[in-house]
Image (cartoon, rainbow, N blue to C red):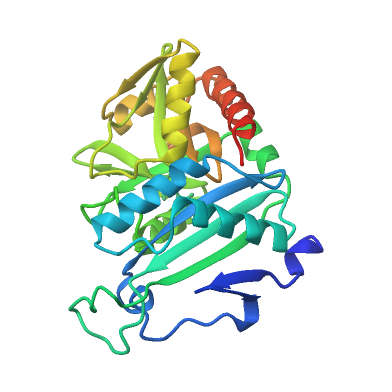
Length: 292
Ligand code: PDD
C-alpha cells in the first residue's frame, strides 16, 4: 500500500466533511437494518469524474423507483463529488456514494414518513494507476453461477450479499469473477455487465429488470456503434460464450476488461481479443475527454 492509502480520508456524511474515523451513521439506519438504500460508483482519472451525468441520472432513477426523495440536484451532487476529490487530493480512484431511507429512530418494516431525512455518505477510494490495471493486459477468468438475486436488479441497491458471495465462489475456484446465469442465460457479472464477441459482433444482454443498466455499458455501446462496430443487444448462454471469439466486462471501476476464460474454456488464443482491447482504448480516451 502506498503512503496515500494509509492517510486518513475525509469523508462526507449528511452535510459534513469529517475524518473517516469520526464519521457516524445510526444503528437504526434503514441502510444498515434493511439494505434500504442505493449507491453509485464514479471513477476518477487525473482528478476528474468519468461519465458523471450518467451516474447522476441513474441515481435519480434508483431513488425514484424506491420512493426516496432525491436530496440533491445534479449540480449539488457534482459539487459534493468535486469537493471530496479536492479535499482528498484524489488523482485516480473512485467516489462511492450511498443514499439510504435514513434513520426512523427504530426498526420497522413500514417505511418512515416521507420527510425523514435520508442518509447521504460519500467517500473516496484511492487507486493509483486505475487505468493501467495489469489485468487488462492478460484478461480475467470467470465461472458461471446461478443468479439468485432479487428481481429489480435495474435499481442499484446496496443489497450486495449475493454478488459478494459470488466473488468469493470465484476466488475459491481460483478465478477472478463470476457471471450470473438465469434460465440458462447470462444476466451479468457480480459487479459488471457481460459481453461476448462472435465474429465482429458485440453481443450483450438487452436492458430490463434483470440487469443493472451500466453507465459504462451505455457509453461503450455508443462508442462501438460510432466506430461502425456491430452491436446486438440480446441474451446469450454460457455455451455460446464458451465458444465465442472474445468476451469482456464493463464497469465504472474496470472500464472495459477482457475475459479470456469462461468455466475453464479458453477463448480464442487465450489472450485479450482485439475488439475488447480497442474498446478499452476508445472508452478511456473518450471518457477522459468528457470528464468533469
Ligand atoms: N458495479 N452490473 C452490476 C451488478 C454492477 O454492480 C455494476 C457496477 C455494473 C456496471 O455498471 P457501471 O458501468 O455503471 O459501473 C453492472 C460497481 C462498479 C460496484 O458495485 O462497485
